[in-house]
Image 1 (spheres, rainbow, N blue to C red):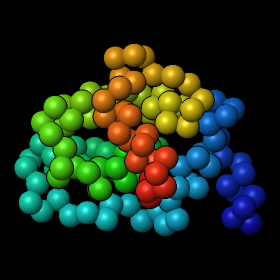
Image 2 (image 1 turned 30 degrees about the vertical axis):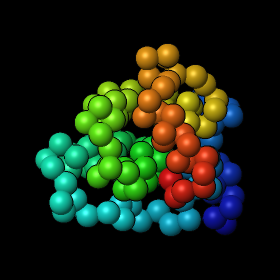
Image 3 (image 1 turned 120 degrees about the horizontal axis):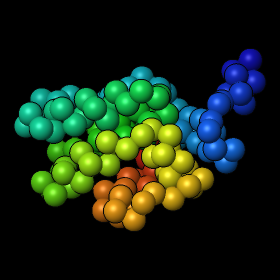
Length: 123
């Protein structure tokens, strides 16, 4: 039953089904990182990465934030804040390879998140 439910994932892009994120998240329990020890800016960013509006983007951005938020430079934090202002559908399509981002967003932190996903880390 679960397999048939997953097969019905809805997407605005034919090549970017919800299965892309689900394949990378063996458990979908949410954040595995406490915000203790983070400055207020990083705490807000961690929360925003886990509360996107779509579960697929929660897993992608939240998983990256869990693993990396404490180690990001101030420039990286600013870059991530800008990136997450984009619509989930556009980000998801870019991460899954179904579409390209505008050049202003396609470098920097986007590349790091993509490498994080491609290396097999939990999304």
